[in-house]
Image 1 (tube, rainbow, N blue to C red):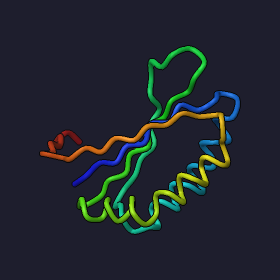
Image 2 (cartoon, rainbow, N blue to C red):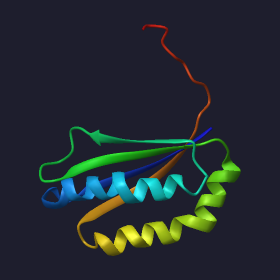
Image 3 (cartoon, rainbow, N blue to C red):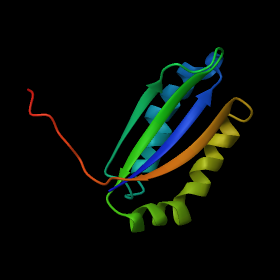
Image 4 (cartoon, one colour):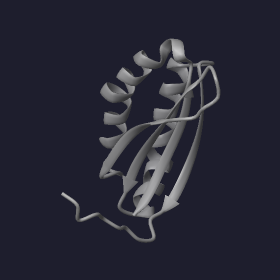
Length: 107
């Protein structure tokens, strides 16, 4: 399994509108590529004054599917985001290989 994480610091003035667009448009578009089996959006706590930071994490079952996403879909989806929120965000991307998973048996 491969985790593809996109961390975005967004202008607080547009954060709610951005979150709505991410939930209703962008994340569904990324998931529709068929390259990921789940995604989640999380708020990053402890960021510097004046910014709101979120981590959007996508889970891909294989490196091959993540490579397909990056070669076939990523540029257009990132361009759409950049055009819509130009100058109002900063983003960086991280890829992580899942080595082992642990689950709690607590109800």
